[in-house]
Image 1 (cartoon, rainbow over the protein chains, first blue to last red):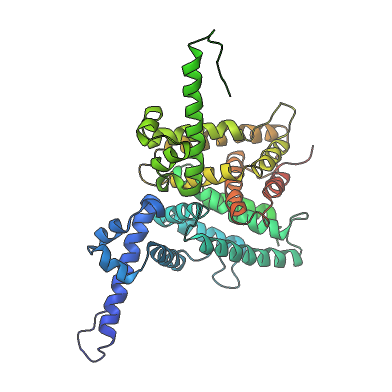
Image 2 (image 1 turned 30 degrees about the horizontal axis):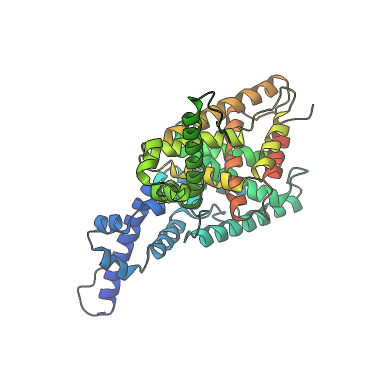
Length: 202
Length: 202
């Protein structure tokens, strides 16, 4: 929480307050969209949660689509991208670490799953975000699988490009099953099994 | 189309007409839910498509949730379940055949993807359907992977239960990527790659 009661840096006061307001709106929208989807969630429901009128809310986010993008960008800062934390971390360690972390934030995973699928429907404001996200993720994993192939560590016959799309697909799909039956599904285990088959030991 | 103009089997007339009406409502609902999701699609939109009032529509399907289940059950009859067509068909052949077929019905895949993800949200009427569907699919693939393990054809270290969940997950996830970039994603290829790694040659 940023307050500024001294008056020595007056311009930061209103800015900090506005920033706080935006953040609380984004958190409320996150809850509403995770529970009802983007189309099913209402701006009024978000406004009620933060105790402001819908008109005031629209002062911060001019449209429901703008609010959706703010929620998606906020999500990125929370969950990271499944990449290596430092250059010495292996692909499998980075993926398993991220999957284990995701188990601690089911609401965020639910939000991602619902909005991603919904974004394939007509004129959905999240479509470009998810299309670009998948392109970026495929490019990143393609690079990593290609580097492993160059090092002779990719299983013969495995195509780096298809493996990149498949790893992301497996991850998305296992999250859906986990949301429905968390006690039955081992997300990190499924991802490790896959990578252990694709990547040969050093 | 079933017509009955001869009058010889009078009772079938109204029944056949009612059945036709139900079918046209289900087809219209399929389009509306695929384009807008279940929560975003309106009963009025479905009624408009078939040219009847919302009140008349509710005579056939008492609630939007009932209509959703009718659409999901209809989907099952269109797409099948990815199982073998006859006992001699191998698991990989059956999966690849189904995936190739799915490429011909993008609207059905979109519907499935959207409704499945949406069903994890609060009080969604499709939740039980999808939970049971996943349980049934996991059971079916578990049986097939276990039989392959008994025949010494499962790669050492592969757990049949986790492989069953992973195959379904990969399939769901690759469908989502394909819906967004059909020219870039080879669904059948990704599934075959996976099964070729998991199952050893005869």
